[in-house]
Amino acid sequence: MLVAALVVVLVAASPSFAAKGKPKLKARTFSSGALNQPIPDAPPGGVGILRSPINVPAKYKGLEVKDANVSVSVRHDDVEDLKVGLIAPDGAGMTLVNFAGGTSLGSGQGGCAGKPLTLDDQTPFQLTPFGPPGPLELGPPYAGRAQTQGEPLRTATGSAVAGRWRLVVIDTLGGFPGTLDCWGIKLLPRRPR
Ligand SMILES: [Ca+2]
Image (cartoon, rainbow, N blue to C red; front, side, top):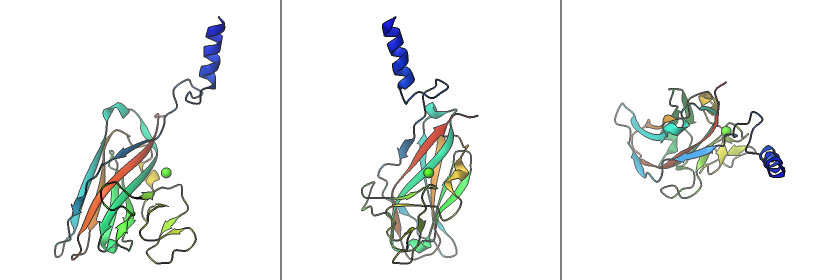
């Protein structure tokens, strides 16, 4: 009897149990792993496109996105040529980076090493290609946290967690090559209401 009462007290006190008795859902990070994938240079009159998927396993089926953060590591001779977007499993699209300047997104030197650029709605920092950055601005090499330069990541709120997430890197100007070193997505799930 005493043991049963103690168990009840311990379970009630555990922060991993929400009010409804279901375990609280935690954020999970999914990484592409080291890619070192070339970003195709724009051909004359066209654009170069690299699509990179991260597949979130089916065990997350039935959960939807409450919050998403995306980290990217890119090296490119002129980041001003680039647009970087995200497409959620349900097709919602967001422009994360829109012709920023500099020669990299994040301070990685290849693969997933180094510090990436993390796009996050819950930071006051904005990307700026112009240096030196002012207060609440993040300048090249953008190794830190900033808001997206297009649609906010909350565009993906309510999307399915499980399925194929795609990072899309578009080179709009010929002349300079680049590399997608690594990317990742941190997803905080919720149960559908
Ligand atoms: Ca966020």
